[in-house]
Every structure is written in structure tokens, then in C-alpha cells.
Length: 526
Picture 1 (cartoon, rainbow, N blue to C red):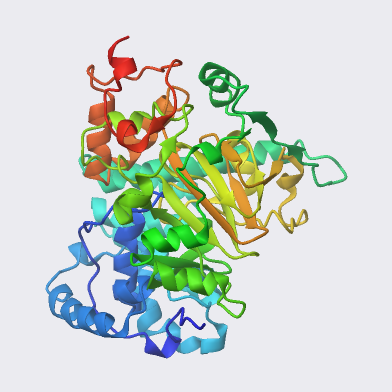
Picture 2 (picture 1 turned 180 degrees about the vertical axis):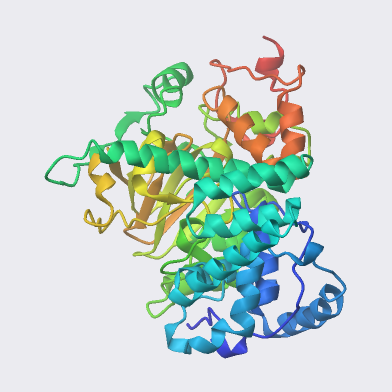
């Protein structure tokens, strides 16, 4: 069975001269925070000549229709002050001049505009353009054009060039001229995080031993659900941010076995956007959209001996795409008090999880961190998965990059560590495990993790909030709220005196329908 997973490079077409100036509406189906990356994705797609539809779903007919509409609509949008931020300026330069400097074989194997733009920015020609753009914007400031937009644009270029101190100074200038511009304030937070990482890395470099050695990984604790109370889980694992495998759990979560055939029977006619691994991608876990298919065809592909092994059903929301499967679930008592269910109906993230994962043997999701400070769990029904995890406080040792959002991507390949290039890896304290069918893994907020599917696997996962990560979540959402009104709504709800941020140690497993009702009877009667 054959799937076409990407469009050829010569199929990239011109859409627009103008950047998109407003954040688009989107359905909340991803675990990562994609608000600003979606904004950038549309902007970069337009300027690079790649439509958002092409970048996300290679449907020829729909892609052509959307391009025609975009050409008509986008040309009406003027650029503010004739100043582009780094991404838009780089994309425009690439399309008009830079693209001519490279042959197709030199380009990354991706139609994702963020990945292409990152690659362009790291080429010698791209660096030269950014340096020239920096000098041009500095000249504008010296000539008296000390506007917020020029200062912010210069800061964005300096950030791309790695000059974070100068970027911070020019962002301070931009905010002083336009203190109510939330995008500038969001950029301030982003640059601050990167400067903090660089400062921590500088300090940690002084602690390196004379001989660099790879650290030995310890094993994740395993404990039976029959011997672990809700309070013990919270105090020993959630509160201390310690991963744990809870055994004898997954089989209690469904009415019957969740085999590939059962999923095909229930969800077979549903549509899903598949992911594919892309080397050097800047997207979450280095997975990019491949194509949209119906689930039964994908499962047939997974089962087939000659199927495409690079296609991954990754983080597919059951509440949003296949409610009948979600309604078969019992939510484990350890997560049944999820604070996200205490939000008002329709709130962001309230109806996103659990999500479904189906992968062929050998597929990986590269090192990544789950979004907005959330904890999460994964229950495995079929196959085996190898996990490598790192403590949240060791993110700086893994060489994180903040590109499109506050969710980091990582330069390192932890399966093939290069201590000459990434010496701080020698100071990390990884833990690892082989997740078996019937196991449930708890992963604390902020922990970078890498997964390899050792066998064809079926799993579900959910992000959640409780008292252990509540403050962290509110802070992450506060920053996201600068560019996303949905996050602002969550902050408002969570900081309300009426929001019950209380931990219930007496709660039991809840059927899906009861889990979605708030308040739960036991909590209401406390």
C-alpha cells in the first residue's frame, strides 16, 4: 500500500507579497501550543510561496482552490511601516533571491515553512542577508526612525542571529514606545527565556569534568495500581515531579481490548491527519503533517507487510474526532480530578484529550516537552515503547531552542549523543523504561522525553493539571495569553475565587461520562 506523503519542491507556488497580520482561528486539536507557530506558519507559507494547506495536507484540488483565494485576499493587506520581522523578511528574500542560490537536492526534505525557513536562516547566504538586514534597521534607527516596529523588527533579526542581549535591549525600546503591544511583550518573554538558558549553560560549562562520559540511565519506578493510593501517587510522584509506571492499570480502562481491529471497527470511517518524521524539522518532536486519510486505510497500511512505515497517527484527539471511542474509557483515579475539566464548556484544552497514538515498529518521536506546563500520562494497549526522560530542570543541558513558540525543540539526538558538540549532555541524569502492554506511564510537567516504538503500538495519552503543576500552568498560560485570547480566558477562570483548585485523595476511577461532569459528586459533598 502506497501513500504520497509530500509535494515535490517544484510544486511550490507564489501566493502573496504580504504577511498575515492577524492570528487565525484554529481548532484546538494539538497538544503543543501552536498559536504563534500557526500565525508564523501562515505568514511564512505565504512569503515562501507555500500555502498553509500544502504545508499541512497535500490535497491537490483543495490546495489550488485555497491558493487562488489567498492571492485575492492577501494582496489587500499592507505591511505596517514597511518593516518586516526577521521571518517575513527572510522569507521574502528567499523567494525573490535566495532560492536561486540552491538546487533542489540541497533543500530539506520538507514542505513545512518553519523547517525550510530555519534551514535558510542557518545557511551562509541566509546569515549574510540577516546581517545586512540588521545593519539596515540600525541605520533606520540612527536616522531618527525610532519607532516601536523598527526596534522590534531589529530585535527579531538579532534573535535569529543569536545576539540575545541586543535583542533584549531593542525589545525594551519597542515596549517603551508601544507598551500595550502584546506581541512585543511575548517576544520579551521569549528572549528572556533564551538568555536564561544561555546563562545557565555558561555556569554549567564550568562544572564539566576533564573527561566527558555519557551518563548511565536509571530505570523508572514500577508500582502496581493495586498497591498505590491516589494520595501516595500525588505525594511520592506528582508533587516531586518523578516519573512512574503504574502497572495493572490499562486493562481496567476499557470495556474490552483495544486492538487495531477494534479501533478500525469503531473509528474506521473517521478522517485523521497523519504525521511523519522529518530530519532536522523544527516542529514538535520533529514530526510534520503528512496527509489526511481515513483511519481504516491507515490501519490497513500499518498491518500490511509492504505498508509505509513512516506514517504515524500521533496525538489524535478522541473527544473531537471519535467520541464513541472516548466513551468506552474509564479515567484512572490518579488523574480523574483533572482541573481542566473544571473549566467552562468550550474552554481551550478541556475537550482535547485523551488522544490516540498508533505507530509501526521503528517510528520515533524526538526529544520534546509537553505544552503549557501540563503533566501527562500514557496507557499502552499493544506493542512496546522505549522511553528516555530527563528532569525538567535539566532542559538547559539538552540545548533547547525556542523558535516558533515557547515549546522548545532540541538540537541533540539522545540516541546518538555527541559529547564533542554537546558536552553538557554529560551532566544530565536520564531515566528510561520499556513500556509494556497494560502499563501506564506518568510524565511530570516540563520533562523532555524521547520515544521509540519497538513494536507496532496502540496507546492513548492525556495532559492534565492538578495541584502539583497548577502554578506552573497558570504562569505558562499567562505568557501564552499575550498572543492568544483563549489562554487569557483560562487564566481568568483559574485565578477566579470560584475556581476549585483542590486535590481530592478519595476519588476513584471515573467512567468517561462522569469524568466530564463537574463537580464530581464526591468533591461536591466534601
